[in-house]
Length: 392
Image (cartoon, rainbow, N blue to C red; front, side):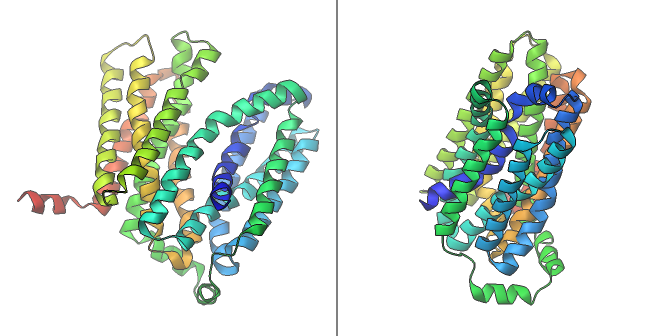
């Protein structure tokens, strides 16, 4: 039951983000508004997610995981009720912002609970089991939303989110508090600024965060630009949707491969291999984009599948490594980790959107920029000088 609870919490924010995407046009018509106004609901949601991730960490370190999570889930449920009943785009957007602040409680706190309850490889294996399920969320959520929209209308999508949230609330009530009372007392004596200072000045935290940010930003660069590229190549909307299935499968393969390898090898042995796989794949995409005028998406999807395998393995390793030294303020560290990662993803997505007319070249440029971030993160946790000593 606990694994199901973790899975639900980890997938929740993605379901809330993506389930309503197929209903954009129906929401626009129903509210007599513009496409850009409906599209703004994604922007305000991202803003709410970013802000909330910085709030829930310190709060749960001070008052405990369970009560703060329940408050966040309650905010999510109540704001979703307002969205489902809204008749104006203004109310819709305000409630959507509040909904994001509620939803991100789950994405921050479930990671902190894992760090609270499990040690070393145990937590890495759990992350490796759950992350592939997280990868399924962006693929499954729009499909579920499309079914609900076609049969019951767009408001049914948000009704479903309310039901899912209530089920997770019930599961949360059954779970025990993972944050010890002694830790709460110690946390109360520390300032939030002191926690943030200790986290951000940690090379281990920053290096692993940069690796995760580079991997995620690469993913978002592709997701943002690839529909335009495939459209320019003549693919239909249905075909475009199908081309994302191999990447989702590849991400899952990466996650479970990581879990299997952890049975035999240390994370420090596994991580460089998958970083190298991602870096080489990015280089291949970039070189191919600038040297070949491709008329099919196949070579890019094949190369990106290797990036997805790398990402699926990198995420569980770096999340655990980044947070494991901050058990006294793991939720604060988790929130900061997610916030900074979101900033990199937003920057990559915004760059590709701004230069969308350049197609695959814009994607390749954004991905190539992430090579610098991969190098910086790797050098923080695996300094270049150490390799020199080994080869000397």
